[in-house]
Amino acid sequence: MSGIIGAMGIGGGGVLIIYLTLMAGVDQMTAQGINLLFFIPCAVIALIIHSQKKLIVWRLAFPMILGGLIGVVVGAYSAELIGPNILGKIFSAFLIFIGLRELFARKKDGESIKKSSR
Image (tube, one colour):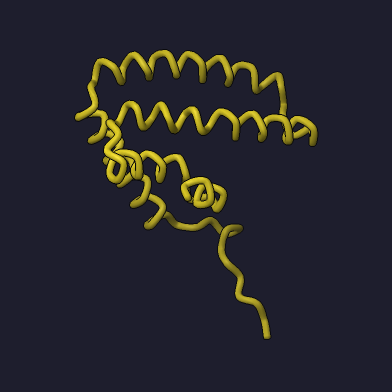
């Protein structure tokens, strides 16, 4: 289900974590690990497709990949130090913040939905 929601742009990873923690009783850190494991095949497929369509600027991608790998190591270490209770609260606050930001964000001129003429 979270894959379907994610494909619609709603954020299947967030939905998966919420499902695993609230419905399946999985602790926060394990749920985040499972979410990352589900993300890897999707990212590989997206990378292959975008690469074939020449949509990747590799000279920019490599520094981002390096930064992402450093972020993973720092994030995993920090999550271990923080602990599951505080980590869950931080994740909840993040979801609320993003939701409110999306709800109250002003649309740019090019993003407005145009009404079709009859």
